[in-house]
Image (tube, helix red, strand yellow):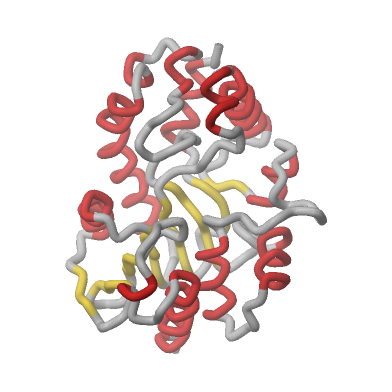
Length: 257
C-alpha cells in the first residue's frame, strides 16, 4: 500500500522538472507509466511499484516542487537518460521547440542528446510540468491501479481523482507561474477541455495568428498540440506535427529582445 500521507504530499507539491528561472515552461497533461497495458491490467501491482518507488525517492530527495529530470530518473532507474535510450515521444515536442528557440540543428541525434543530458535540468532554460500529478497509463483513465493501493476516497477512480484535483492543480500552477520568471508558458493540448483549463491558469484570451498554435495578446502564453496528438498533416499549416514545435521555437526566438 502507498503511504497515503506521502502520496498526498506528492500530489499537492510536485509539479515536474527543470528551472523556474528559465525562459520557457511547458505544461503537459500528466506523466505516463512505462508498463504495457496488458501487463498493467494483469498485474496492477506493477504500476504501484513504479509509482511508489518514484514517490519514495522524491521524499528522500527533499520533496521538491521541481526536480532535476535526469538525476531524478536515473535514481528511479528510468530508461530515458542512458546511453542506449530511445527518443521519448512526448518529450520530443518540447525538445524540438527549445532547439529551434536556440537556433540549433534538429536531428534525431541532437534530440536524443538533449533528452539524455539537458531536458528538465535545474540549470537549464526551461521547465516541464504537468496538469495532473499522478502518473497514469492513459489520460482517459484506463488501468487506474491507485484504487487498489490507497485508502484516499478520491483515488477510487480516475474520474473522482480528476474531479477532486483539477481545480486545486490549476491554482497551484497559477501560483507557480506567477512567482516564476518565465518569458513564455506553452500549454500542450488544443482540445476544448484542456483549452478551458489553460485559460483558467493564464487568465488570458487567445488569438489565432495563422500558426498551428494560438497566443495571448502579450505572447506570454501559447497553446499548441500535444506531441502525441494525431492531427492530420493536411490540417496543419506547417504540414507535420514535428514541424509545429520547430515553428513554435522560431516564433519564440523572434520575440527575444
